[in-house]
Length: 305
Ligand code: FBP
Image (cartoon, rainbow, N blue to C red):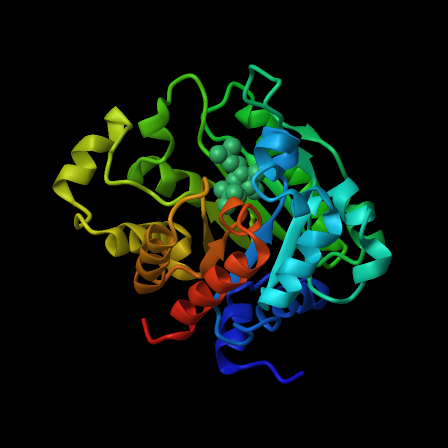
């Protein structure tokens, strides 16, 4: 496989990584309909863990079968599929080598009151299952954020030594943040920057709103305002990811109308984001509808920003 100039440029940003890790980043970037563009669309299906089975799969019961998600990601021509250990194990032989996979190695669930995650898989599991990366969630602002960051430090070091890539879901939540604060522009940029600093190769955050939440940051943002425009907000997050030297993708959120999701994708693309990680908006739709939506998303990322 010949790497495109764009992918070679992206790999050059990861100055300390070994050939194994770079190959795995390249595998993700060179797979699917966006291969070689530097843009990515990833299917994450860990919502069964996070929200429970019915909330996740009742809208499209095909999703109760872990094989369905592999098929959806492959047919849609996505770059990668991310899932917890059990789901990847339940599909391992059927889909080995068909699409790069990201093993989510920690999880929360909706039966907990505290904002924490359990480590549920290992780097050895990721290697055994042929994954390209491990995925890890941190909750900046939670009472357990420092323990989570330390767990990530250990797992990321192990994954990198084994030649895997590291994808970090950085989701601010905890006692000092209300719902508005969790996706406020300053907080989202801060969360993305923490993920970059802890050594993520690919950073995943939620789309930011125009709100500014942290009192200590308000003066700075009023002196150096970010234009009130979605693309400018995405560009601000890209800046927080080492001025674009780290790949950053944005989550799709709860199922919503196709137009609203596509407008968000246009803004991510215009702002220089590297793509989308779309779960519920894909697997909760009937398959044909999901394939059409994913194809429209891919077309946007293929177009000139
Ligand atoms: P969605 O596109 O369904 O939002 O998936 C992205 C994701 O990060 C999942 O990996 C995760 O399960 C979910 O969002 C968490 O959502 P929430 O923060 O709303 O609980």
